[in-house]
Image (cartoon, rainbow, N blue to C red; front, side):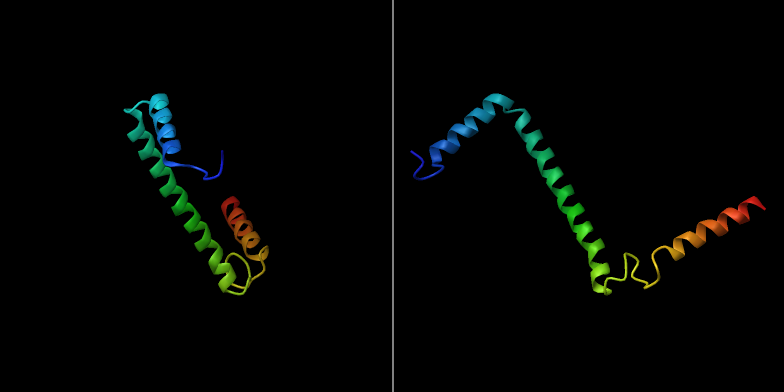
Length: 87
């Protein structure tokens, strides 16, 4: 019964059912949207890998890679801006 897995006639039945469910007019649009979604997913995963790579390459000193403490630089900048704006 399941000795060969999917045979060609199984795939033919699946194609026929899909065409009957969605109609032949919507299939190109659906395939186009699926392809666009796959390209977006691929580009986003590539961007995430590129963002993670500099932190690993610089020895793991943080996301900025400068070697400074993570909390010191961001805290100083907003405090200076806030005091200058009020005086």
